[in-house]
Length: 504
Image 1 (cartoon, rainbow, N blue to C red):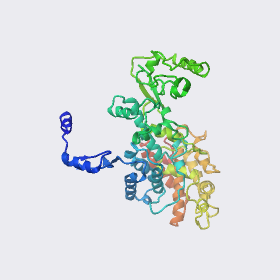
Image 2: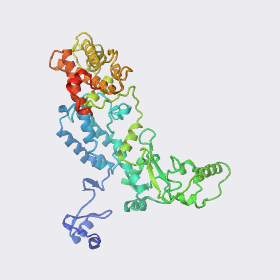
Image 3: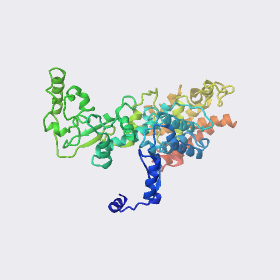
Image 4: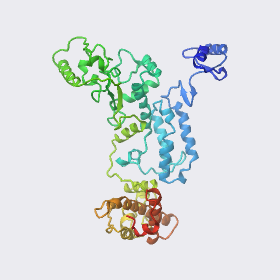
């Protein structure tokens, strides 16, 4: 057999690197046969290209390699050396990608998802495996899309589901591929009428993939309803079992008449151009009503000469991409928020994230720390020393903040900024008195001012540095200039134009 493989493929087997495995065979017999072949005797499970083959992936212990990858990566980075924005960027670009090799094939147990997300959350808030710090914002809020009030990180469950859903898409589109034929040989039978075939008596990877499609994964989202067959010739899309005419398969929309069908796996072409095959004539009542409705729906269907295809309904172009699935799942989250921040495009992520947290009151001001049972001294504002420190006081009613906003309004040539709550500052750029072209610039300057105020507050608290409004104002102008010049398309702007606000 090995010689035939060599003759057909041109690939010679290196027996010294090969292993012989037995399934349902005594290990002694495997050893005896391996000795005759000239290779080593192995047993399941084993690793191939980093993945465990033959292991029960429903057991948490078999996910230990993924745990180790997370722990080793986190050990290389010191969260204390990164800002919250830096840690968010790191989680988004690195940690979410680490388990993708396993997640693209195996459905992760709930315990594994929880453990890995616990590691991510600890790192995100500056903790480690040994030290846990305050988690200022709930994970469900962080994982919302930005346009729904979150940060846009992905839940590991959503990543897992999105990666597994790719196999359903490929199964529907790659009917001539060998792996699809193997799946059909193992799972397709005369009593299975699901969107994807799955034999309950067979355990393994494919059944766990199919389970992702059959039940709501987030809210009311059922992935099989996000796939729609695009009928051409009609010979590759199943009339009853595939969703092609409506969002759901016809077998679910017309269950009584479907029960009368003789060939339930028939194609669209079989029924549109052929004849109906019933076990017996539809009886008066429900069956006849369903048949009349079905005939009315099918009457408008016309076949063409093009090949049948599939469309992913989660993307305007109909193309399937994993990120599109993640987006659909994230947007289906039932978590509701009171306010959605408009993120500014030219200030750094750390600045946007700070404003996002401050709007929710989730920054370590004296009142926020006190509510969490932490000692905060006298609790007074470190800038004015006259009132209790809170988000609204620090950024709106504190004397230092009031003077700063007055200076900024004069500089930017806008009406005086009067804010009674933090949210008022986030709406300044929306004023009708602000030029349309200047709105994103004013918003970015306000965000920069909030950032600089907070930095000045921290210097006063932790370093005892005296706070001067003029110093903060200069910091706002210089930071704003650098961020605007090098993070937007206005790299031609000069410092003098920025200071005079005469570049619009």
